[in-house]
Image 1 (cartoon, rainbow, N blue to C red):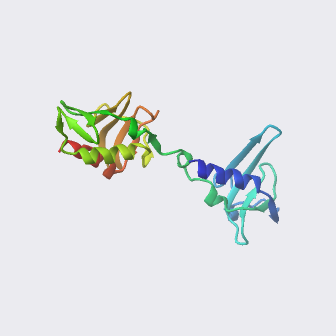
Image 2 (image 1 turned 120 degrees about the vertical axis):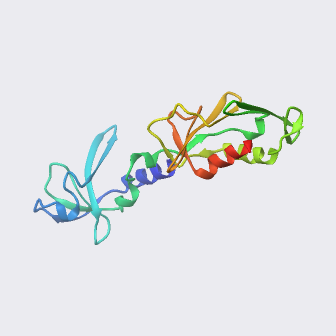
Amino acid sequence: DQNKIQSILKGIEQMVTLDLVSEAGNYSPYELEDDQATLLTVNDPNRTMEVLLGKKASSGGTYGRFPGQRGVYTFRGDWNQLLPENIQDLRSKQVMSLDSSSVSEITLIKGDKEILLTLDGETWKQDGEDFTFSDDIKNQLNSFTSLNCSSYAEQSSEETIMEIRIGSDWLKIHEKRDDGYLASSSQSMDPFILFNYQAEELLGLFE
């Protein structure tokens, strides 16, 4: 997510120590023990900086310390807000991007049933007849202009409920899970989770 990354970079540019809070070497009250703190490492061509960041300071800013030093400082910025709990939160959720205006043929596959759709003017046709869900196809193509997932998954599945082929690109819906539908696409290196409504609208094209 470029916006989140830019916010972090801006925070780093403005990062300074505000106050020396303690030199007692007791880090727990500030959530700065090694197993509590977040290690922020900044590399540039001239230097490497490491800062351990803890909880939000009562006076503003964030408690932090430099590894190997006893002092606890307050640093400018609310780093608990800036830094994600999970590195995946920084990743773009876009898993497919198509120019819908250039699409003239779509193949829908579900089980042993395959539907070839061709665009005739502004109407999608199947075997020369108007496709029942022509308007729905138009809406789905618009969503493929920038299709975003809810999250990424660690593993895919051998099972495929439905596949959509658009030119050299494809989207596969594999299985329903508690958090949505497991899916994959030609434009994503990793499998991902679609929201229920996204997958169910696509599956509804066969009903």
